[in-house]
Length: 100
Picture 1 (cartoon, rainbow, N blue to C red):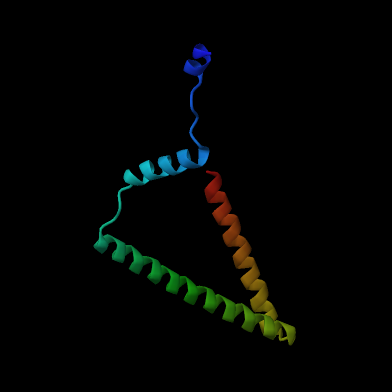
Picture 2 (spheres, one colour):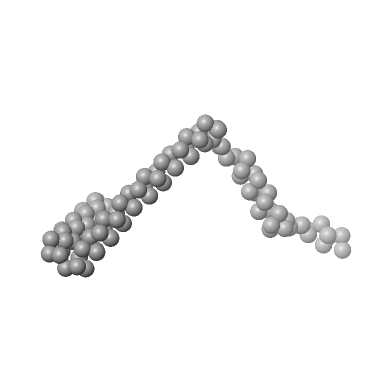
């Protein structure tokens, strides 16, 4: 009986082990200063606003183009074909750059 008790190793609860390792890992994190945090927050907000404006302009442009294509205006049909060709060309050009 005494030999069996010595060989038994108590296993940690997996949940407790997870929280212990998480706490140890958080102790090794290099946290930014308050000034660095505000600077990064400003950058994120600026990029978010810029992307929202960019996507809003694209949405407006393609909505305007599509509404004029539906009315079968020949000028906008040509413009639509030009836009599609430019987009396909840009996708091809970007794809070739990633292969090299």
